[in-house]
Length: 358
Image (cartoon, rainbow, N blue to C red; front, side, top):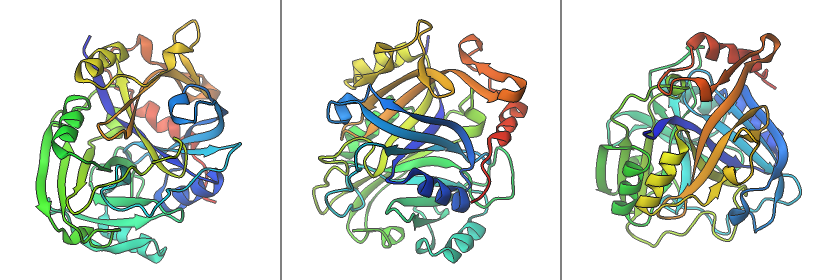
């Protein structure tokens, strides 16, 4: 069976105060639909948590206008560490999450009124308007124009549409994101100084910059909700980049992983092994007799690999997900045809999981 990528499910974000961080992302960016709330021990991430299981609290939240979600993650029994140095554009790892916007001018004006804008509303090398913001916790996000919505709720921003990832060798990173993750179309490939980077740390330096997307329209599962996504690879040309999570744990402060919703995990494992990117974490080493790892109210199979610069990429093959518990509406993905999408009416029921603005 062939591997299937349905889209970016979520970007992981390590924080020191989950409730405070989620409140900000609800009120300013609309991530108000809670998919799961998991307060347990991370037992399987030992390669990235100092070799010890770690107590943690994680919430996955969506913006139903479309795009991936945000997994907000907090350690419970240790103080999460910030980067050991001021993070610069192009440092190795996830520098920024990309946020979709169906009304870019309204989004800019709203977020400007909240005092979180970095720079101005400008065009990217593709010629499309975008801008950058900073959350109160030091994380950078790019808001870019994407007029498509899954569910138009009149908001100026939608969900996650990709990430900006720092790399050290562009050619090998492009190969990874193309061969492993299906980002096979180059939107632009440019080098030099860029006016739209000027507002970012070290943004006046020279960079090699490649924006990738997928040429296929992804089908099945929640693909219609996730929509099209982009990976922007950024390599500094004036300095040697350093690893953002250097000498820190997965789950420490900042962006911690990029997660994809997938099908046929065994095929992913075979292909990743052949390409030289083996699974470093695999939940199948501890699962129920039905082959599923408990993820709060949901269940499935998750794995991790590292990109060529050790940025963490997660794969999740969901087996079971409750949609609306009062009516017993749930999805068993193991019994569904792989390219059959979850019905729109069913996804719309996730509105009943919405948390009010606080």
